[in-house]
Length: 588
Image (cartoon, rainbow, N blue to C red; front, side, top):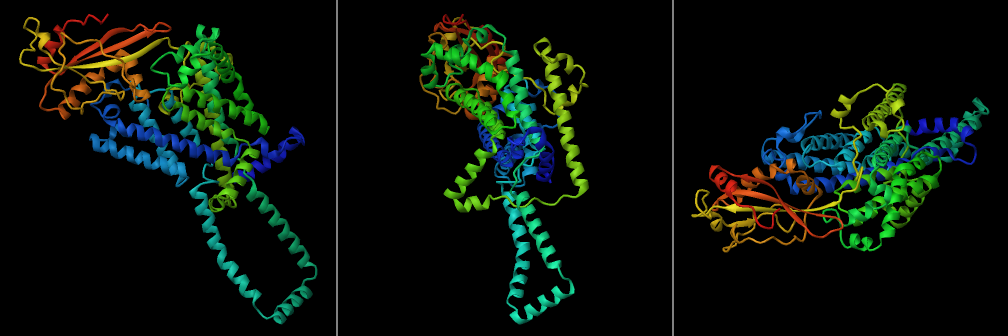
């Protein structure tokens, strides 16, 4: 039905666009939606796998993200409903299974809905703690993906549907073969009697059948996606227009944002970051080109020209691929690159499909698209209404983001005319709040050290110089996150003779650990989490408390300044010790 709607609307637009524009180029391609589904599914699998590794820290109620910090604005939260670590692991495994099904196009609509529910739950659970722009973009893409025919081509659902239709046609083929095996004389006699009783009907029926066959072949071969596919592009365009409008700081105006960010160790990905930082003029060019691409390039995606859509795909895909080589900003890059796959034009997909058939014929034949399923008139009307509601909701979403920016939005007057639905948008996590190094690029390098103070016979807060008898263990591991399973050395430094630790090989294992310690208020949950994890893994040694230290340096200076972020004691005995510990001389 979606392909027939596209064909009908395309015929109406043919006269307006002219003969030089093919009707199939006006619409997006179903195969592009399939590639988008595959890439988004891969990004979801990477995200869930990463979350499984750190589930105790981020999803457990006793982890680094306390439940009381959650802003109750979302509609669903399966992770809060899960009881215990086993329940959280079960939810993550269901999420992983749904992501795999979505990626392969198996039970696509059901798996897409489940992935959206889990994404909404994850964003709600990690809100005001370690959530970042990748969470918001993932949830938005999954919401709009539910309105798309993602399984019509290049999916297991499409392959199963095609095989079922082939099995239904096989009995008819057997019957036709049996008729062909009848005696020729009898067959000729029946043909003569039919021709005599209805002269001329044979030619008319043959013409009708031939016409229907050509029509079915044309419909079966069409890959035009319905208009609602543009909702995905509108979401991507809204995000980039928002962030470009808010990049008004001096680093973006002067062209120093990229170079400045490459010098920050919490973002830099070596060796590419160090290599690019050797060319300041190139970094200045990249800064200005990034702003212009985000501000204007998305408009090319809505032009009915394959070359324009190929250019916009290459610009944004190259932008995020290059950023992923030089910067560490989590899985946001994967979700952003997935979103722009929707813009892949028809000629490119035709060549890709031909290459697939030539290199892997069996796989190519399995992914071949079959005839569209027949839709009743009520189903067609329902699908049209859903598309219309989708565009209305997108309009409300864009207007809400414009009103939130205020004077930074050029269409503020028009946005105020759109009815407000901020509450519902917040529950669906469709708010347009994007902060990709805006309004200015960060200028402080960051790393952390987490010291654990262990109990000892003479480590008492009421004794003189007790800190010379308090053993200290470094809890922030070289893997970029707190570790409590490493074997404790027999000889530990005490608080009195401890020197400033050297930088670790890896500062932050994932983007979420960086988000946790960037804000002192968010990192407070690290104290209670450390105490509980220590008791679980080291029951024979008592941990009195922890001291988090943040090491910062202003770009371009390399000299670090270490500042104590907070102290946390595990019990009453630890409180007396931690509160009385003197500040280290290398702490400012």
